[in-house]
Amino acid sequence: MHLFIWRCIVIENKLQKEEIMNLARSLKVALAKRDIKNKDFAVMMDVTPQQISNWVSGQYQMNSSNMVRACDALNMKVSEFVALGEE
Image 1 (cartoon, rainbow, N blue to C red):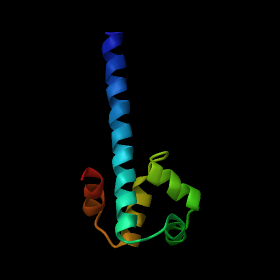
Image 2 (tube, rainbow, N blue to C red; image 1 turned 135 degrees about the vertical axis):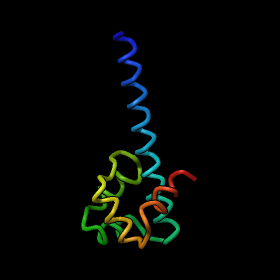
Image 3 (cartoon, one colour; image 1 turned 90 degrees about the vertical axis):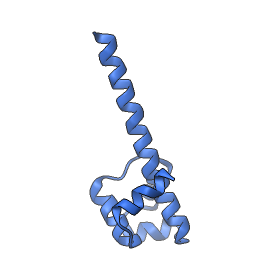
Image 4 (cartoon, rainbow, N blue to C red; image 1 turned 30 degrees about the horizontal axis):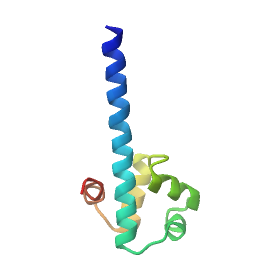
């Protein structure tokens, strides 16, 4: 039974990492398509350039409110943004 629970936790962690990387890819692609540099996007988002770098690299995941703010700043629907990471 404990092995089953451990496997579920491992699978969940892998899925979370994939989701983080998909959002990171979404942001990276969106910025590249619009020719926006991380430091410029940081100003648009009112965060540090390091925070943008962390999101783009997948080091940290954007929370939902930051994702919505990013989509607004990029003039994108959330569904369009998420789809960029799945291409």
